[in-house]
Image (cartoon, rainbow, N blue to C red; front, side):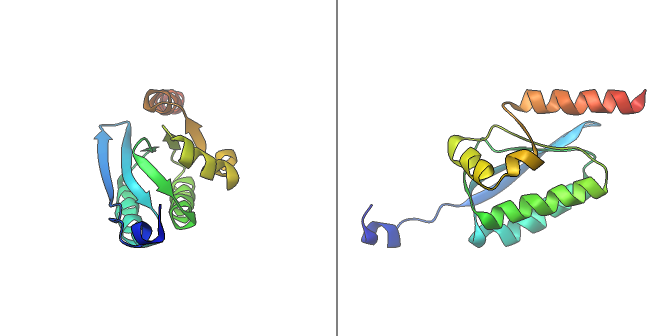
Length: 132
């Protein structure tokens, strides 16, 4: 990509969609680039979800890129979920995002799964153990 192409490229948008599975968890679907330009608004939206959630899954299937600013938001979320004693899982990382998680060692402090079903199963298993 030439410098001119880079300067005049269309910015990649960032969006967050959330689904609630009644009684089980909230699943957050970030899409696009999670970076310094998008992390402020995204953090506000995600914190609102965290406040309602008993458990949380981030499905990163459509996340194209995450910068240190995005990682900071994930860390804030992890701390808030830990204080609430609620499970937090990540799934469906593409190769680029997976590399960023590995370089930053986030893969050692966060629960990461290959699929959303794997993450859901882990949450359901924990919920069953807690209710027994």
